[in-house]
Image 1 (cartoon, rainbow, N blue to C red):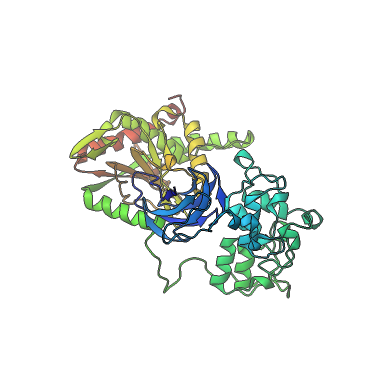
Image 2: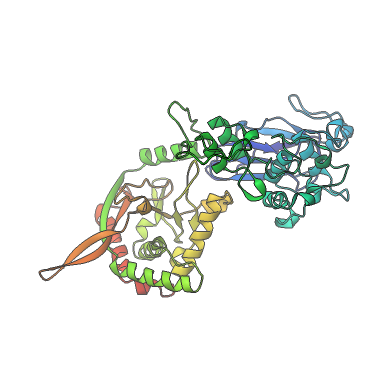
Length: 488
C-alpha cells in the first residue's frame, strides 16, 4: 500500500511551506531515514526524512508553496502504481542507478547527482547534503571521491569546496566516474575546475547584473568565481580571462531595484503577517528611557582589552543589557507574560529572544533561562545563535518560546525606535546607540555615556507606571556593571 508523504507542520505558527528541493528523485528507492526533500518554512529550512521504505513518487514540484498537511508524494512497493498525478516508475527497473540517464558519461548535473547519491564505491548509499550535491553537480565532481566531514560522515558543501581547492592533479577520478567522463562543466571549464565552479548565489547575481560567467577568472580559493568578481565585472572592471585592466569605480548596487516586485511569502511573508497581527491585536505603547552607561562602557572596555590578550571573545554591550533585562524581569514578572484566552499568563521561565538581522528579513533566536546565566554564558549563547542564524543553521527549537525580546539598532546609529511586540509576548525592549551625554557635578558639567531604551508593552496587560518601573530597574542594574559580572 502506498505510504503518503505529507508536508509536515514544523512549528506552532507554520501554515504553509515551500518545497525547496527534492533530494531523492522520482523512482529512486529510499530507505527509512533517508532525506526526501527540503522544506522551506517561514523561519528555517528543514530536511524531511523518509518514514518508510519504497520507490519514490512525487506530487509536488520544486518551489511549490503548499499548506501544511498537503500530500507531496508516496513511497510505493515494487510494481505498485502511483496515485493519480504522481510521478513514478512502473517498477524497480526504473531506479535511477540503473537508468540510461544515470550511466557514466551523461553530463546532466541532475543525473550525476542522482548517481553519486544512490551508490558509493562499495555499493553503499552515499550521504550528502542537498547543497553538496548541487555544488558537486555544477562543478563536475564525483562525490564518491570525497570523505564527508558532516554528521555521520555526511558530505557537506565545504567538503566539495575543499576538494576543488586542491591542486588540479588530485581531481582526476576513476575512468568510469561521471566526473571523469564529463567533458564540459556548466560554465564550459574543465571537469572539477574550481575556476569553473559558480555557486547558486553567485550565478543568480551574475544573471541579475548581466555578467557572462564564461568570461570570468575567479579570485577565490582554487580560482572560484566570487561575488566580488561578478560585481567588479558588472562595474566595468576585469577579473576576466580576456583582460587585465585595473578595476573601475564602485561595483553596481546589489539587491532590490526600482520596479522589482517582491512577493510577501517565506520569511518576508511571515514577518508581514506577524507584525500586522501584533499591531492589530494589541494595545501597544512605547516608553523611552535614557540610561547612564558610563561605568558599563568602561568595564566592557577593560574586559575587551583582557579578552584580546587572552585571545577570547569579550561580551558585547548587548550581552550586558540582555542579562540586566532578564534580571529585571524577576522583579517585574508582568512584563514576562502573554495573553491567552483573555487571561494574562505569567511565564515560569525567562527566555529572552534576541533579534538578528539576516538576508531577507529578521529572526529571533532564544536565549533560554537568561536570568540564570552569567554575562559570559549569555555572550557565548548569543554569538552561537547569531552565527547559526546568518548561516541558516537555526532549528525551530532555537526560534520558539521566547517570553520577552530584545532588539538592538544602536550599531546603525539609531537612538530611539518603537519595536513591535512579538506575538505571544506582552513586551519588547529596544536598545539604541551609546552617545555622549553629561550630568552636573554641582556647577560643573561632567561628560557621560548614555543610551536610550525603548520599551514597547501591551497596555492590556501592563499599565504605563509598571512599565516605567521596569525600565528604571533595568537602568539601575546597568549602572552597577560589576554586579552583572557576578554569578547568576
